[in-house]
Length: 294
Image (cartoon, rainbow, N blue to C red; front, side, top):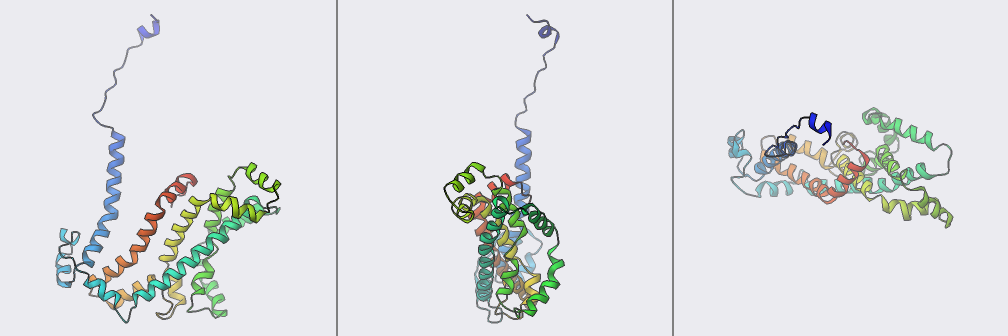
């Protein structure tokens, strides 16, 4: 028998009745889930209660989170309000969001692919400029941008909410990270077959970037959907006003009607939840792969 085995005392391992790390992760997940669901449950509960008096009585109690009455009266009043046309606001927001995100995906991905595999000698310099612009707060560019669109006569229009935000340095950087990791053999093989840069991008690189497209779509959708400061500055009436600004106006005109306000908020939140659920798998895969923190 080996001497070391004789001299070294054996230490008995104590087996815990359950996995501590797994229990802690489960506990943290439950806490995060409750932090998300409690405000949502309160919002939905209040929106389903047609009595403003009962809403005020239940506020601050457990009944504010559990529906006691189910009625769609508040939703009907919001949808039929002639002074705050919710459907018009919804159309404006959807148009702005889809045009901004959809066009941005093609333009930003094409720019990123050119930076990653283009023939220009200054690609690294362009990338450094893009990263430098990325760290500049958007609010710092608001006034110069407002002067430009005012000169162009774009105030109170759709294009003033779409065109300035199609190009996104963050999206370009995400696509660049993905395209730069593509195997060089694939790109060289396509070039040897006579494919040009745009053909390689459109037929090979862009179809492979589905996780990045999903991430950019979700983040761009959230950013455009919740945009408030810029639409507030460039829209004047209900014709081009998006939901973010309309929500603030609706809150100001319906000071005491919490049921209507919560119904408006639920209707505004539903598209975001639907988009996230549809693209959730691709979003998580991209976050894990690219190390995006939020």
